[in-house]
Length: 280
Image 1 (tube, rainbow, N blue to C red):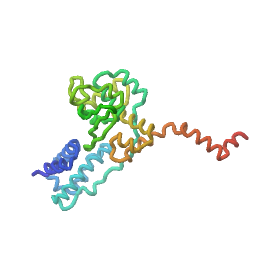
Image 2 (spheres, helix red, strand yellow):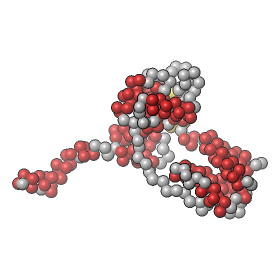
Image 3 (cartoon, one colour):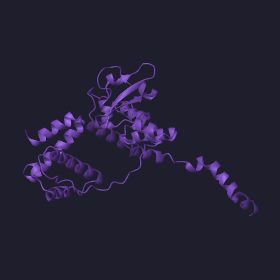
Image 4 (spheres, helix red, strand yellow):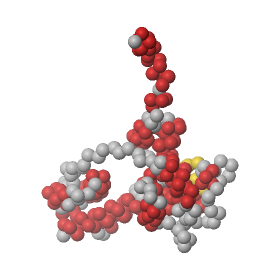
């Protein structure tokens, strides 16, 4: 059996998501073509040279490519296909945690005022459920439980499934047909790539610099502000770790001065600042 065929089979047995499997195999196929010989014959020096081919890319992309490469060689070493892991010393770029970039409420008002076609439901699912593009495309009518308190099952990254409430704006826009919920103008289900491209084109045409993913950030940012509960927001977002969710909790500091006004008055009283100002 070819090495990559065996690796694919083992990833599928381990229940890796189809996207992870395909992305990893695609990268390794390109690596093998670049090497010009089987992957298991690569040296540490050759893999470091391969990694340098991606220096022009974003650090997050280089990190993903590096992790995919290292995962394969760990598997090969565990399988006994190689004596020493040549990828173990590959340097992974340091990633700086970014801040959320939510779509503003003014932009959302404009978007929902003018959007009536097949993009409206994806926008609702991103803004009022925090769904990713791929999750919107995967949502099926069979994933919905609309009795009493409506819920939906979301098939997220890494094959993880989470349960989310269906809020009224979404409930009112859901179609009654079976199959995939979000569809294009021709009635075909959206694909993540096409939805991303079409939504970007539409929003750009409205004169907005926001994105479908930024609408997800809006949902999570406001959920963090309203609940102050990182575990709750983590589960809404479908994050593996609450550490990922912390960027939304940091964003909940907006308006901190106004919210701490009473504490400022207390501080003035305790430190004598208020009395000093009165004397001055």
